[in-house]
Amino acid sequence: MEFIVNAINKAKVTSEINSTDLLKYDVEGAELEVLMGAMNTLISYKPRLIIEVWDTNFKNIIAFLQKIGYKCEIIEQYTLEKYFNIYCR
Image 1 (cartoon, rainbow, N blue to C red):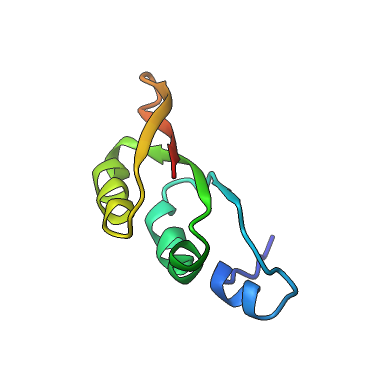
Image 2: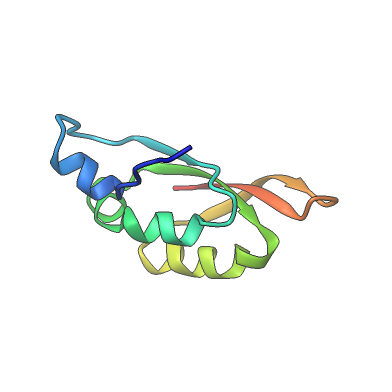
């Protein structure tokens, strides 16, 4: 399978989307890259976020989101698989 991947910032420019209230990500380890690709949207619209985050990326993702004004909390933790679901606002 082949997929075309675009940053959400680009999708918002080329469509009629005029607001974003909630974004949910489960991107298998690419969380930081996805968030960086959505930075303009995150800053402009400040949507709530639900993100599945792997243990290895957790600190970097929280630090990135805090820098742009988000407060995050763990809403679900899977200790055997070492990943979390976080909610950020």
